[in-house]
Image 1 (tube, rainbow, N blue to C red):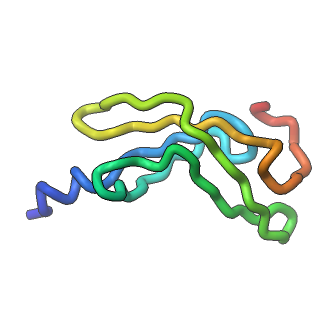
Image 2 (image 1 turned 120 degrees about the vertical axis):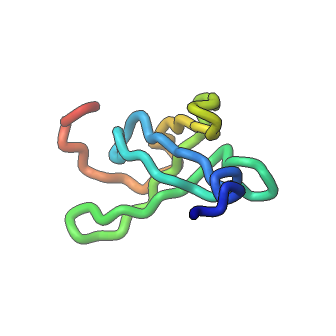
Length: 86
């Protein structure tokens, strides 16, 4: 049986726009708090690229913290948009 307390140390991060639009990750709460700003690495045409995302809103979804993040293009590495979903 899974540890019931484990659910209280993670949250769901949803990336609502930018190059990671639609991606959903499980992240760890630090001292019970989610990150207001997160960085994500992704390979774009074989080059590691750093993307920054800022908290848009927070809500409870079936007893779990769910944070939506918005892309910060000004602070992120440049990338070539495919035009899909943006």
